[in-house]
Length: 320
Image (cartoon, rainbow, N blue to C red; front, top):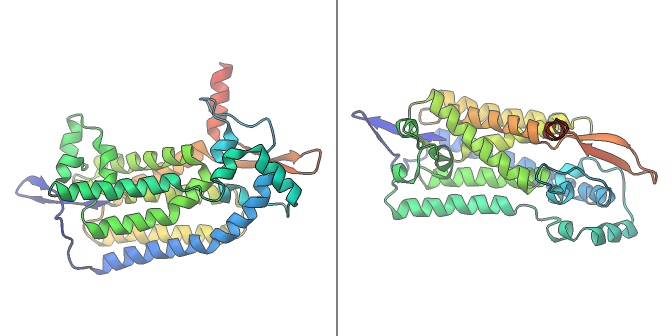
């Protein structure tokens, strides 16, 4: 998130046109590019590993159900990297045909589970166009402004994450979202992905509200939440994920660089970034996925069960 400035006791939005690029802009862009390159480098390996393991799991029953009764397999049918880490070997063409016939839902978006990332990117761009059309009235569109939130305008905790100070700010955040978003959408499935994104956005704005008086806008808090969620996933499955230690080190490096910039340069809302990171970590811990090895099936397949805490809470409520 980026903070605006104070002048003569009144809060004003950031100017429409950004200043000449400074070292902070270059460092931010470089960090985003590095994370995107790292994820893209492993994407083919993750997807190819996922194909064979998903085919093994596609017809296992019974499956976990969420509280609202959504079958967990369709919810996770877009989660290719999730299953990819658990590949136990190659699968025959017969198994492939069987899996595809058993789940038309998974076959439709099997390798293209990024539709909600595309929607979020489009929303950020369309909102920015609307900002320009209304003379960049960030106050009108819902920037995080503490005194207005104090008056009950809680919706600003969400809307501020879809506003941007200038086109450079928008481009960096969209690139970052496009880098990590598709991976997290595939890992989590669409429902959990949206919950994760909005929980991170709200946590980012809330932390900024509690600890920073300056108005703020930007999607970077939500992106920090996605990065934190990716770290939780790798940590949870470090015994099953190849190169897990290397991935964690890279994620930690990206987080550290971006947080450090907030301490040394003005105009960056580090509280918002930190809040988004915590929100993403907490939401991912609660909602999962948290795959655990159960036991081999009668035909030798390895069976994994999602042990995310949310399922224990749902089951406990049902028993009470």
